[in-house]
Amino acid sequence: MPEIIDHEPQDNTPAPPPAPSQDSKNLALLCWLGSTLLLFIPGLAFYLVKKDDDYVQDQAKEALNWSITFFLLLVVGKVLSIILVGFLVIGAAWLCHLLFCIMGAVAASDGKPFRVPFALRLIQ
Image (cartoon, rainbow, N blue to C red; front, top):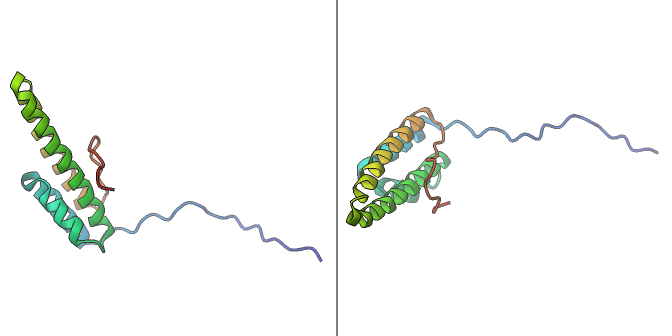
């Protein structure tokens, strides 16, 4: 007896991730805003404490990666300040830091994932 095969179309597209809750958005926003002045401390704190919330965990990793990258840019600028180019590097690094933290805060308030374009991805 021949086997009957049911040929229903299958949708293999992955389901979109669930929208983050308002608490998750607020914590991610706080993480990005805190990173403007406290550098890596808020990102590290949220990364270590909020293991149960995927959105906060993701944004904390991104804020932490950017803060580490920013710190390395400051070190390079400090070394290059011997030849007076470093002051431009330090100024540009601070400007980028403020800009990316504000962009991250705006994206977090909307519940969207934010990626800094040229941050080192040290923490996966």
